[in-house]
Amino acid sequence: MSRPHKESHLMERVGWLRAAVLGANDGIISTASLILGVASAAASRNDVLLAGIAGLVAGAMSMAAGEYVSVSSQSDTENADIARERRELADNPEFEKEELAQIYVARGVEAGLARQVAQQLMTRDALSAHARDELGISEITAARPVQAALASAATFSIGAAAPLGLVLVSPANRLLVVVAIGSLGCLAALGMIGAKAGGADILKPTIRVTFWGAFAMALTAGIGALVGKAV
Image 1 (spheres, rainbow, N blue to C red):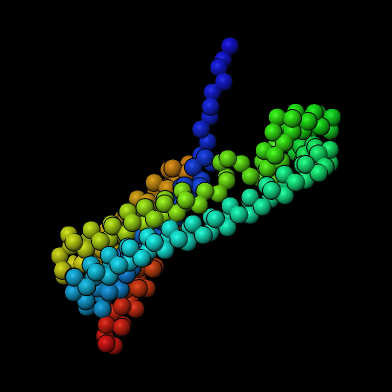
Image 2 (image 1 turned 90 degrees about the vertical axis):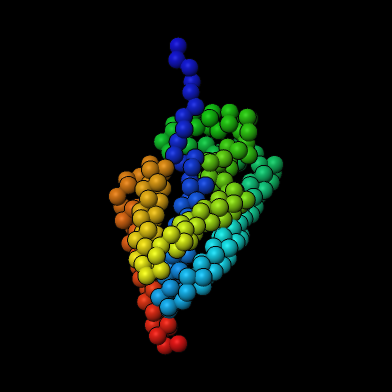
């Protein structure tokens, strides 16, 4: 007799993976673009480093705050829906049981069996059954504001540290080239890691993140050069 085993699904990673990839990607692109923009304006290495560090700190805090507020809004909505469902279960349990059964019928379950399943699930945990099958809220997809905020801030900082490190090791006359090429390499690696962790094809995410990173860096460097000449 085979033993039941716990399967690990990629969807279990979706919450933290989205925040982590977004944070690291934004950290590399925004900090590298800032560095290239300031460097293109003929600033000194110290000025470039100062701008990069300020961008890292401000960006990490912005990512954490933005992610926390955004995911908290989702969490508030989920909690409001669950509270309403709890009231409806208390006021009219028979209607809610039939509503749950009809959800299963719509998915292809025979009506009699659907009512039996609804009865058994509601006997065990009515609120969880309705949250999962009526509202689409489960343990995997539930909003986690603190986790998302910490993941975004940490990964932004890690991503932003890459172009800052490139500034430190690059010769003064090669700073723009080294930071640009090195940052694009980091973005490509991030695209591959994110795709691998999410179980997706590697090529498309890698090209996508590298293209938009190159576009942002080129645009900011061009603006920096124009401003530098004007000033």
